[in-house]
Length: 299
Image (cartoon, helix red, strand yellow):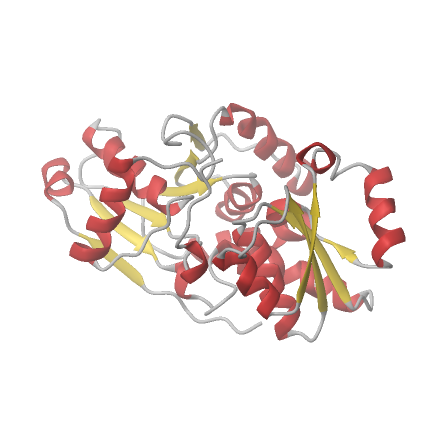
């Protein structure tokens, strides 16, 4: 997969000046035209393993607006592989932009009920998929597995070369936070902003991932769970207005699922005085943008 070196964008706002802190945004959303943000890093070694094991098909899971479904379809297409997306819920026509894009990249969509989808990690359910579709390389929902954490750890080491004091990033499954913590190896202060309602369980998820993959549990990070705006893929009018303002006034495109909530949280924490005066905050733009993001799943 090609990789474009992402720029750093500095944001200037009165609230930052009053707090005497500097805010930089790592524009990882620009690292690839279709496999952008953290998805590039989470899929890098999954793709390598699939090719090494001579698989010709990638199969993964996601909701109808899944950024991961989009990225997996693009990765498979770029590498002449087939792809299958197991989609939560019933088919709704016309397809939304995310699934239209996935189909344009050759992904075969298979819909399962929300009840059946809950069994997606169980061996019996996976075996039934192999009976139906044949052999495939399995990538879990959100892309988080050992191969993904290996990629995000590499990303964390790359990020560690930037000059900053605090790192802020969104969290949905924990794979990105776990890998970046390992790449930073206990350095800096990391804040992970949960985009899920009731996301407190993510602390244990991240600690388990770092313990299993790197034999360490890191103490230099904190999980913030009050900036979800109603839950995963939910939004609010203030958040939508904030996203519009950031795009129009600062030329910073954000999505409603991850990065909008991230930047909202960072600025709220600045107002609350969390960050030491004279410090530099690095917010990681993890992608999630595109025409397929024009609709929001409000279920």
